[in-house]
Length: 123
Image 1 (spheres, rainbow, N blue to C red):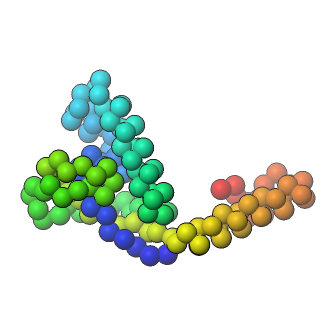
Image 2 (image 1 turned 120 degrees about the vertical axis):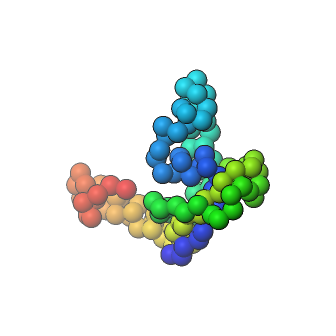
């Protein structure tokens, strides 16, 4: 596992911090839900593309007061604040090995007639 830094726009940073109330303020009640859905889709794409398994909860504002640098999540170049967050990634091989092990554990549990996986959790 390794950590990478991501540069995010204010919208994506707010979404990842689970502070969805700001979208009502920024976009109004009628548009906020669609913005949240669009950002959620972009976050899912980014996490899949970069093999991200975990994003830290802390973000720090970059020292630039105003930036047009692209957001690593939604790729917007609209001017505004940018935030740096850290994310842990796993290589495709590691991820595939983990998924295969989980699949094998589930198959073993099914073969034994158990209702839960050997580790006591379903993935």
